[in-house]
Length: 342
Image 1: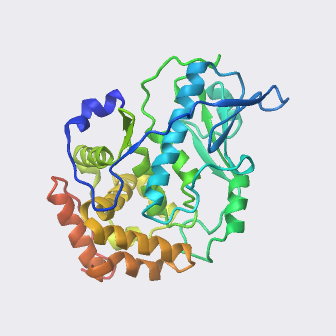
Image 2: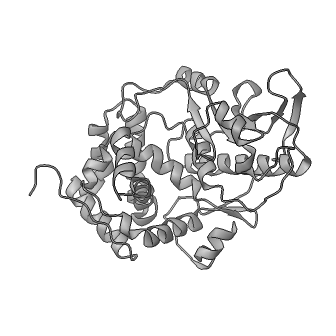
């Protein structure tokens, strides 16, 4: 667990996970990068782990290979643990060489920006082929052929700076906050393209909060971290829309609220995920599983949301339950009334 989480007090919090949800899982072993080739004329050095292939502009020292392999494989293991409960098409076992997820490592920020990295980012997931339109609820079912295409058409790009590594490929900072980077890795290994934007970003944020400490990935501490962030940022949890509006929101609308107001839609997205998997017990996990299965089978978001409401049946009751559940944990969330209501 990095220093920031310790300072937040997460280490001293105990949170019970719902039945069948991951609690603590072992950190993967044997994650150090293995060199496959060097100086191929384009990428410099090529390394692999069980699930990733890395293209680095310079040779990495032993500590760098250990740190990178551990971070990426821990992110993958966290997604795989979720995949034992929810439908996660991509997070499986060891990947064959031809199907490994690709990562491009750049020695400095200038190189990262020159190769398409967004300004101010710690890393970026780039998908050249979308299975379904971003923000739509469906279109058609994801097939094995689609999954094969996604693997070979997308990548994650990361500057050394985000990994605590200098331009010579040596570790100079081993205590970085990896949340933003793991968020991007989750977009790659969770195969989120078929999900509406709230779930897409919510799951990426959720996995980004899973810490690994004492050789375990701790999902209980993940929820505790989200809770503490929500308490600290309550002033950003006042929204000019209803929860129902949010669950139907497009990518442009969600990002627009983050840029044009004080409404923290990223935090709301991960709070929605936590509501179903941490605050609603087994019924909540089932609702999320049924919802994601419906989307992956090609149902519209409109129809799939009925499964997300579960026993509550209506979005109004879901909003009431959501506000109450977080309120009982000291977090105040305010929504506008659904469209059409006074």
